[in-house]
Amino acid sequence: MSTNLLISFFAVLLVSGVFSMFGKGGGSLYTPVLVMLGMAVGPAISTALFLNLVTALVATIVFH
Image (cartoon, rainbow, N blue to C red; front, side):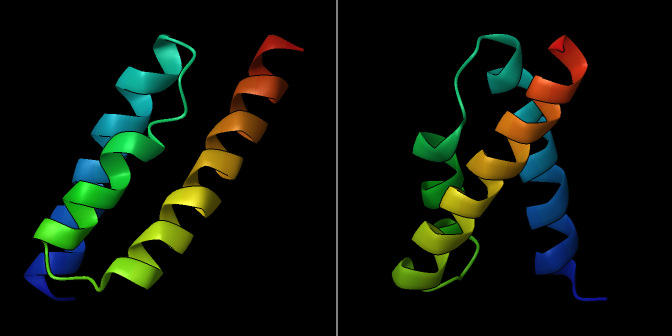
């Protein structure tokens, strides 16, 4: 497993945890973090949108 992938995983996990507590998806911070870690802009935006969907689904399940 590459170091960038591991750092990305923990950075996204931290961002999603903090932002979901405030009711925000975190996409505004996922994209810059992923781009700074070397991902191209297009895939970073798509990944951020997917992560927003996952965070919203988990929050919906928790608060249902």
